[in-house]
Image (cartoon, rainbow, N blue to C red; front, side):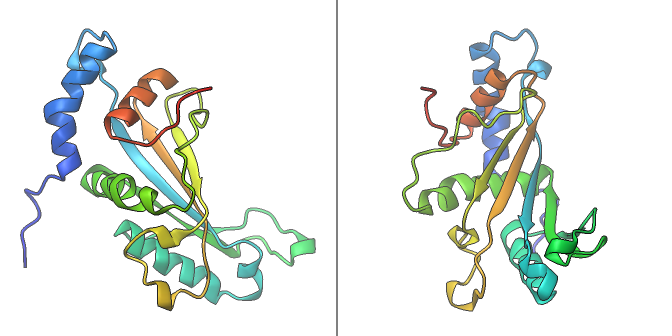
Length: 189
């Protein structure tokens, strides 16, 4: 058994050693504590209307999300009943997971260096996907871009929502932070 208690992810080391200083200078901040940092990453898979007829679909989404994130996801439940979709309140309709600390840095490293380059016809992430408070959200159409997923064993292709929460006060600070992590964000038009 390997002791991982003293293990620090590569991307976190880079942030602590280089990115913080660069951001301090480029954003004209006075104190190192003002430098924006990542706080959490939330990944969400919605099984949609297929989950109503077959509860196995939600379990497939949960197991796929567990492989991708390396952490046990939580099943999300329907808040309201919708008769047209035969959906009842409290039915499982998807899965989500919140990543923090070293697991978050590992996921972002795999996302930026391995997964996003595997997206077909990828032109970069949308620069308008910031929420005004320094958080960034984007969607992925296929979960197959992650190497942890075995292509032959997949019965259903899931889309994912990924939300990156930062301590940045403005969208420009958050953009600078994500660019330092090599996020492929397109230039604004």
